[in-house]
Length: 347
Image 1 (tube, rainbow, N blue to C red):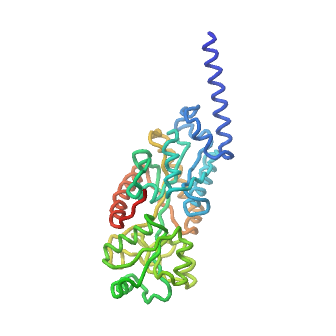
Image 2 (image 1 turned 120 degrees about the vertical axis):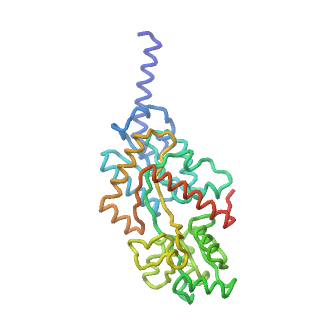
Image 3 (image 1 turned 135 degrees about the vertical axis):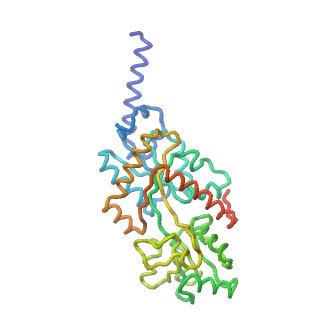
């Protein structure tokens, strides 16, 4: 063998060793090993051998929230199913955009997965002026993961017990009432703006940084109406500290069948619930996408995992890659109209 050939062979072995070492270090070094050298020994797997090393699920929000819980439930189930490590990496920032962009630029091999949400893969492409990825042009949908209601709730001093009574109050005394949301451009803000546009009622918007400070002010009477994820307010409704007005899913939610929907209170077809779902980088081989989707759906259908998700205030809504692509496409269109109605914009 010529020296140059020997050198190339030796170099290849060393590269492979470095690739294996990097994969072993992923749980300790976050995504550094996953994204630093995407061309190193990553393209050899097919659907029959996938996964042969650590898989990383990026959650583009802080640990402990609803999206993080979903990611960790799937990571746990997939690890058991595959006999292979699946790690969760939290990459918060810019409404989910930062973590999403990292995965959009990763190697398309099935080892880098993003748990996208309504914002990152539905709203933000219309909300942000300078998006550096597109939810469908830069990603391959794998499966929807969850769907849960936003809940419209009121302070106990508000003399309304259903949506029509609340709207009558708002119309009778313009300027008296304000509502709090999770923040400008969030699904809670835009969902209420969609409803306001359809119901033709006046109400001022007070954006918060998440549900916790908003709920505190709502209970304290600084604002009269609030809209946020059902899991965040459910305990306060059950304890009598807040009154439930409506949920934003198209149908009543399985874990809380007593809570009426917006749709059944005078707005047929209204549906504006937050969701989450898994995506991989554009160009990921279709057989790997199909295997990943089937295995994720299998995990989501396990009774124990479903029960844990319902206990967290959400439910699994698994779908095929094709179904999820059609859903995301429709969501981008729907939320673009909501952004237009609200006038919200982020530079």
